[in-house]
Length: 152
Image 1 (cartoon, rainbow, N blue to C red):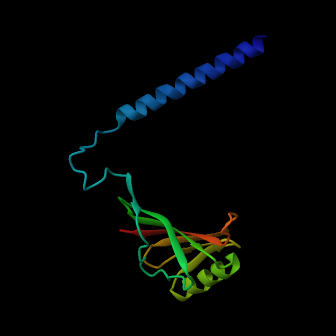
Image 2 (image 1 turned 180 degrees about the horizontal axis):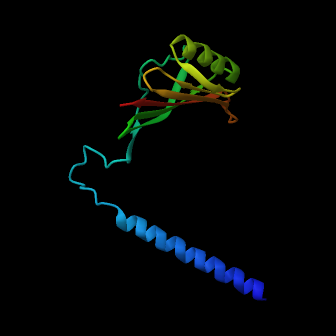
Image 3 (image 1 turned 90 degrees about the horizontal axis):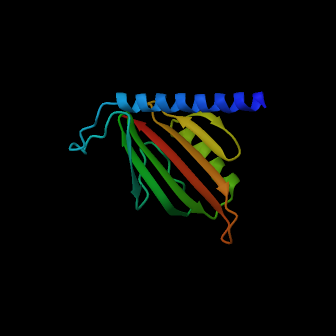
């Protein structure tokens, strides 16, 4: 019984300390002047939905037929980020092989790759990630997710 009480007491003490630490951290933050909404607060990211595909700098466009599903972009203190999701009827292997070869030809350096993804860096500090997966719905095909970050 003593072990149970000690365990409960220890858990409550740790929970209380965690809450105090959180309150101190939030209290130490400097307020952000919300009147200047053109410039986000340092370290924050403003994310916006995209209605259509964006032409990404130094990034090859897949030659197969793609259907744009959704996308978002963000502007932050350190750069801009884009995420685009497409559907294709082409098989996963064909899509990922095309991206591997085309990114290398466009000057991207491969950091890592596997059967469903490739992760690259570019000489200007940009990074990209291409993930390809098989769709298991009634339409079938492939879903392609492109994440792209460009430094300021």
